[in-house]
Image (tube, rainbow, N blue to C red):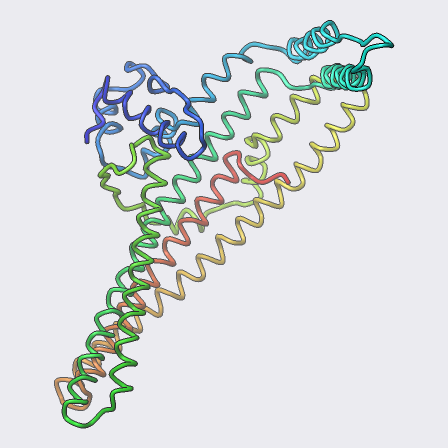
Length: 393
């Protein structure tokens, strides 16, 4: 199914929104991509509209087709250009409307108690609305920052899902080889039993090992399929779409080695969405108590964000070390397999011994690739911390 421009493009968004709605029990209506066709070149639209997913396309796909981003775009129209006073007035107007609708019972009303309770409850709700208006520090700009932050978080989530997809894919090779080895062991046990060299219990044990290996493989394939569906739905494809997911980029070791974490912390504080929102709330505060509360919040958020970047950097270094160790193990496994090939040719080891070395190399290769993907995840986490998503709580 193509994602062609025009009707098919709009249909892609609608399908994704409906699929999400089925899970949430609601049906948000999405009419079109976020941007008009002139926002990109024909070549760029063609790239976004094909059924091939490139890692570098994720941010644009989230912006154009993600159902949450689409809904936020519609919701923002209610806040666009509004000041904190405008929003406070909405609270006051709601409180006034509620007070005007209150009907107090007569003393001889047969439902006096329940009606009085209802009236008093409405009074309390109106008072709460007035208090919310007095304390409100949000405006249209803060709402926009919140939606921008949510979009960035969705991009990060999709990027990490794509990395996870390939990590799970790499792991399948070991599980598939484990099934093959289990089947070979089972066949060998059957042959030995036929020759009177093994008991039925050994055959049964090998048969159980085959069943277990196949079950593990089946579970892994199911998990991989779920990851793919979740990723594709986030990016606007309809459920069950055939999407060619290309490989993710390799982590740039030179880039990691050149990181200046102290400079990045300053950049992270400048970019942080939560800090920007809190700073605007301080600016909008109309009472000393509210301003003081927001200033304390800002101070705590700033300290926490700095720590978050440092922690992300330390995790990145740890994953880099793990990758380097996995690379050493892989090179060692290659050397051992090469030596085993010579021994096999010389007749000093059995074919089974050689097969075990082959499996060891495969395991080391998968471990290396998995560790490489873990390193990419850590780099992704660090870069997003610097680019505005450092945790502040």
